[in-house]
Length: 440
Image (cartoon, rainbow, N blue to C red; front, side, top):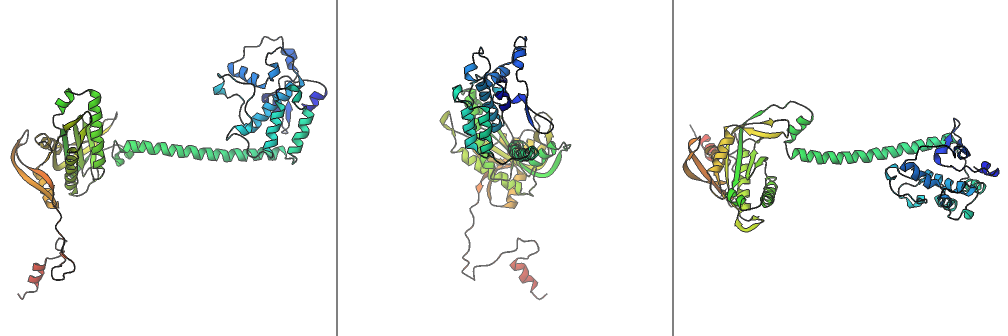
């Protein structure tokens, strides 16, 4: 450009697209003086982006379009190229081409995170841009002055190949950082998806579905199923708006969900006001499933005594619950909105225990009663013989609560302190061991 201006030749269309690189990595200028030959051409109308780009490179004194190209106008266009080099970006983003573009883009130091941090003299570089795009054309330097200024702020000559290798290395490092950030974002989104999926299906089942494995129904020898529903829910729903019912159920079941997290149970589903939970499925836990469900049932009934219905705070919430233990079959049904479902007579019996229960009480079947008696620690009272639809006569029990822990003996009294290991298989009680010492 300094050479062209020595002969008073104005480029008139200086922009980064007209700066090309030859096979020796030398920058060369093209398209100069062609505006004289293209003046009468009937060119196609410019797009919004092209028009905005043209306005950015056009100096303010030539915005009207009637003025001929000038030497100072080329200097202004050169300042926009310097700005592109510093920011590594187009002066007019393609996605923002519809916006009104000013003729004076911001300086590189004002663009956070986009300026070239390795510029040897960023302050002098920004000052050069500021001088080249001065609003008054008389205050702009000539290209000869610009050439000397650039040589002064960048005295160390670097070969074009070394410069390109350095830029490629910098670009590679930038890509590594970018890929790392995107990978971290992807992992966070994957964790969110996993939490959502694991809240709908058991973890092992969800992992098998994700891997495309065929899911087979699995049989469980012993599990305990819990059912509960709200007493008087039909009457409550008829006198409430749908939004009030949804808000009430959401708050109630959110409270229930927080409680069951403290127990080894799995929430199967909620259907209307019905709440179904199981223990021993999909993770087997011996016979402890009965105690896990029993403890959970006591907690749920207890919290209902203090829970207040949002739109009817004076109304006492009452639920009835029922539990039953027995064999079940579990599996995923369907491909659209798949659900983990339980099948078997145990589920039906547990539902009958709930439907024949009473408000704020938990009814247990005989099988659940025997397991809880074997585990110990629970207070159960016999309700008697009950006529159950589809089951005939059944003896059922009320789950009243937990037994208080027996007071511990004083360990400082050697006469009263004894270690009882008789409950451990293979260890005899004190009386049995005494018999072994007797003379036959």
